Amino acid sequence: MPEALRIEAESTLTDRYQTTVPETVRRVLNLRKRDRIHYTIRPNGEVLISSAPCIPQNDPVLDQFLEFIQNDIANHPEHLRAIDSTLLLRINSLVGRNVDLDLDAMLSEDDE
Image (cartoon, helix red, strand yellow):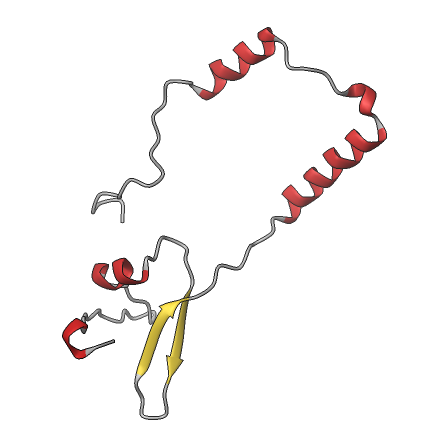
């Protein structure tokens, strides 16, 4: 990074060796909650921090359920049917169709 673009930030290490990544660092690295961080420690003691590649995490229970569904569809295609309007109304009543959700919206300071 050129000297003119250098950004510096500090954070405090807790008793449990945890810290909060400063907002400026999160913004520069485009970090979100649960993202992984990669550290590179150079021989002179300098530490580089970067965002780590996202490693997909499999859910064993969900994987088993999806495999069950896949096998059931393959072995019993006669059980498949279209969703009728009554079932669709029931689904909509359970999920609340009028809920606005912006997954890209910034969290408030209290939610961070």
